[in-house]
Length: 262
Image 1 (spheres, rainbow, N blue to C red):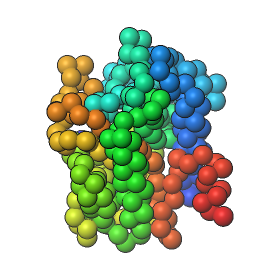
Image 2: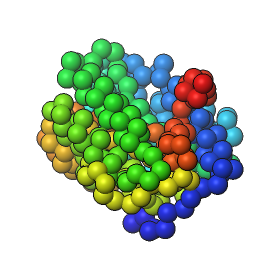
Image 3: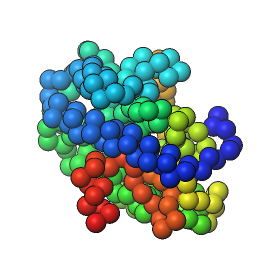
C-alpha cells in the first residue's frame, strides 16, 4: 500500500523530475521504430536497457518486487505489466503498450504509450485514440484546489461515452525518488471528491481502457494482467506536476515541451 503522506516537491526536485521525464520520453521515441511485425518483446527490452545505461540512468522496473525485466510490454489483451519474452513476436495488427521508467540522478521518469504494429483494426484504432484522449482529459482536469475525483471523472465519462470501460484494479500514483507513493489516482470517480490537489504534487495519470469489461485477471507469474474477457486493452501514461497555474506534463520530449510552453 502507498504511504498516506503526500510529499510536495520543491522547484529543484521538479526540475530533476523533468529531466528524468524527458529521458523517459526520449526512450519511447527511440523504441518506436522497432515496433513492427517480427520483433520480439525481448528485443525491445534489451534495446531499452542498453539505451538507458548509455544515458547514465538505470531501469526502475528491473528487480522491482522481483519484476524480471527492464520495461513492461503489454500486447493486445494484456492490460499492464506484460513481461518481455523472446518467444513473444509482434504480429501485424497487434497493439502494444510500452511502459518505461528510467531513474536519472535518483528521480523516476515514468511514461508509457500504446503503439500500433502495422495497421490496426478499426476497433483497435478507436480504442487507442480514445485512451490517449482519456489521459489528456484527465491531465486537463488537474489544477490547484481541484480534487483527485475530477481526474477520474473526466476519464470515465469519455471512455464510457465511447462504449469502453475503465480498469479499476490499477491506478495512477505519486512518483519522485520513490517509484510508487501517495497519492493514488483512480481513473474513474466523481467530480469534487477525493484529496485536494496542491502545487508541488507529482503523480502519474495512466488510464487503462478496455474494449469490453473492466475486469482483469492476473496470471500465475503474479505480474501479467489480462482483460477477463480477453478483449483488447490500451494505456497511455504521463507524469504530471500540479503548478500554481495548473499542470505541467513532465514526460514530454523536450521539443514538445517547448512548443507547449511557447
